View (cartoon, rainbow, N blue to C red):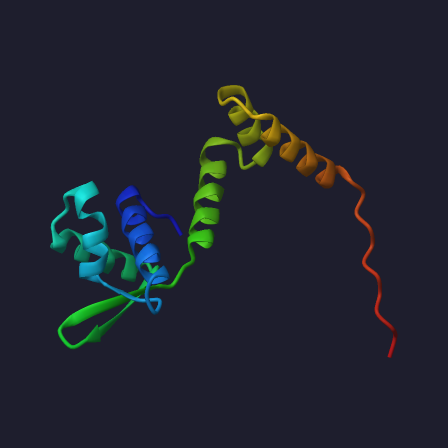
Length: 136
């Protein structure tokens, strides 16, 4: 699922609000979390939540005269989708191309280099065949 920048802002606020509650948040709670940063009107947030509902990223239910929202996608799933989309659009679909770009444009700490080396070593290791269970 592809989210634009505004949708990311709303989803991050919703995930944060849901982490502190019962897994749901009102549009007002979402708005209150981002209004200082965005200066968006409450109706703008409601419109973005409606768009996210159409995309099936959030579910809405009525509680009296309020709309209550819960995320249908996890932050991790959204991040994975965003990275996959970036890889496809800008790096020929390969993680290696992205890592090469990052290593040339951003300084890597020793810890990062060690972690990357571990990943490369792990990916290069021969795969052990799965142990077969007992025959029945």
